[in-house]
Amino acid sequence: MLESLVIVGAGQAAAQLIASLAQDGFAGSVTLVGDEPYLPYQRPPLSKKFLAGELAFDRLYVRPAAFYEKAGTRLMLGTTVGRIDRQDKTVVLADGSRLPYSTLVLATGSRARTIPLPGADREGVYFLRTIADVEALRAQFQPGKSLVVVGGGYIGLELAAVAAKQGLKVTVLEQAPRVMGRGVGPVVSRFYERLHREEGVDVRTGVAVCGIEPGHVVCTDGNHPADLILIGAGAVPNVELAQEAGLVVEDGITVDAQCRTSDPSIYAIGDCTVQHHALFDRRLRLESVHNALEQGRIAAAAITGKPAPALQVPWFWSDQYDVKLQMVGLSAGHDAAVVRGNPDEGRSFAVFYLRQGMLLAVDAVNRAPEFMMSKQLIAERAKLDPARLRDERVAVKELKG
Amino acid sequence: MAKITFEEPDGKLHTVDMAGGQSVMEGAVKAMVAGIDADCGGACSCATCMVYVAAEWEGKLPAKQSDEKQMLEFCPHVQPNSRLTCQIPVTDALDGLTVKIPPSQH
Image (cartoon, rainbow over all chains, first blue to last red; front, side, top):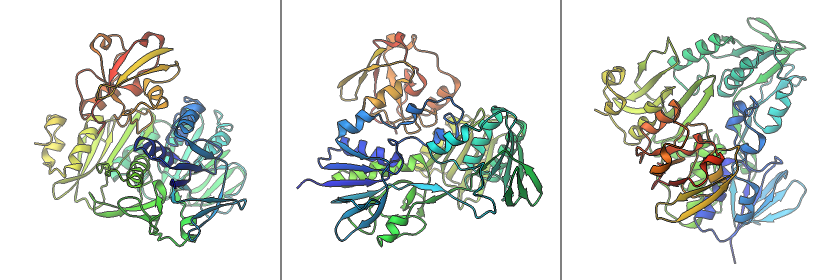
């Protein structure tokens, strides 16, 4: 009997899995179940070009409808899963109908984190995670309106940049002492605070939000007038289905190097997973396109019995104004942060994070050469000389020494 | 509309009819051309949609902007005739373009 594979969740990880299965010669049937009414689409442009109206709707799709048709994928979009019956190897949909599987892949992604704020359920409070979220928000994007962004992470700041460009009055409120604290080092946070201020955004750090009242946000530093409020408080992995099915779940669904969960016929890929990363020797939950694509490829190889693709160094990007931030590796555990270029002036520099001289990570601000070079150096566990890194007279290609 | 031909590393040819209003990368992904990974979806952030452009076409493509130049500088398998397909909009002028896919995008 041919294998019947069911994928729950229709994001970028799922689309990559389907493409890689086709490439790897998977002969079974594939059913894709997604709760949004769309084909798998790219989320990164939602807070950037799509929000700004510079990218048409159909260009968000990872692959066109014809691709799924050609691959023989059965699409069940706008469909919610109720539970997984592992004993019966069946996915039970919310409407009670049953989808049997021989292999199940959970690609359930993550959702916007909500915060228990008084008034957070008021009209005019938005999140940004889906096409529907952007459409609701964009209809309110009018010059002169006041926008308060609660949370100075990537989503909040990317949205702030688009809004400021469109003539909204933007305030960003971040509870931590610096913006983007989870993703980048302090030097980079300081740069982004300056960048946004230069572009006319009122960035406040170390400010706690107490509640939302009609027309304003109540904070520890006073009231901030707001026609619109965006809550950008990070993402929560969608692990409930796995949890209720009794799979091992930590901060995400626990998977092995082949993306297999604690049940050998169930895989999990993308934002919803926690996986040990061999290069950093740590368990990681990565919320990134790169991880979604990687794990889609890894799971496809495992399912079809092909050799696993070579391990890659995690990387991330963020576009704000004319500044391209590219991050590669993970800086946790570094004992030195070496700055190349001047973060206090202009808009171009890079920070190298080292542990005992070994390169762990780089945050590159409009520094693509440093980023591209470092991708390779981190994978090679290269040891670098901080004095040379700092010295701009040493060309990027000479950094390796 | 433009007919663009991709040559895979093993010599296999894949000719695609592409409409305007998109990049060569998007046209290739839609047509399922193998070897154009395009991980970042066209943000000029990953350099995984690189191709080698046939000599007679090098001068006919829109010039590289600084983003693309910088990404290509340390792109694996780069050659002087490398381009990132996400940075090349499809136009009628590209009709007949031939590009070669590198052995890997990593």
